[in-house]
Image 1 (spheres, rainbow, N blue to C red):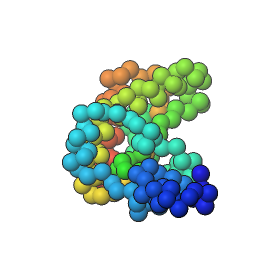
Image 2: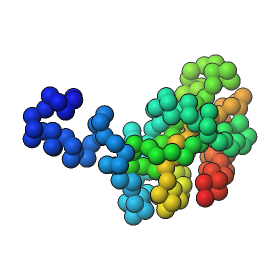
Image 3: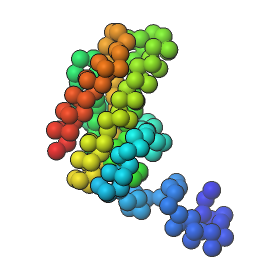
Image 4: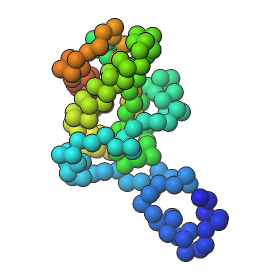
Length: 167
């Protein structure tokens, strides 16, 4: 809803709202502090604000970003200010070229999201300490469907590589 259709009192309330609107600028959004992130560490969630959905930002990751890879997994990243309180947004992809069946692609993406959900906090803490934000795109290009342990080991090595690259 645009502001010009709201009464004066509601316009002021919309400006002061903690919820993001189309007209909100990034200066109104405060990043989570290290203390707030440590409080979130026990919950291990992957909420809507943490999901990378912007087509423009995804294109920018591939055009201007950097990448690291390890044994079939690739991680593309781009440091940029985001319109979210979280230090990072993530997306997951499995190309149809390597896995024709949607069931298999969805299974692999589900595994990657679960590993990310459980192991993202050290990276979040490092980014929060530096007061920076990044967008990442996880991609699996292996020929076989990995099990959870293999997926976790390889993604953890990529998380450590990314942590070293960002610091």
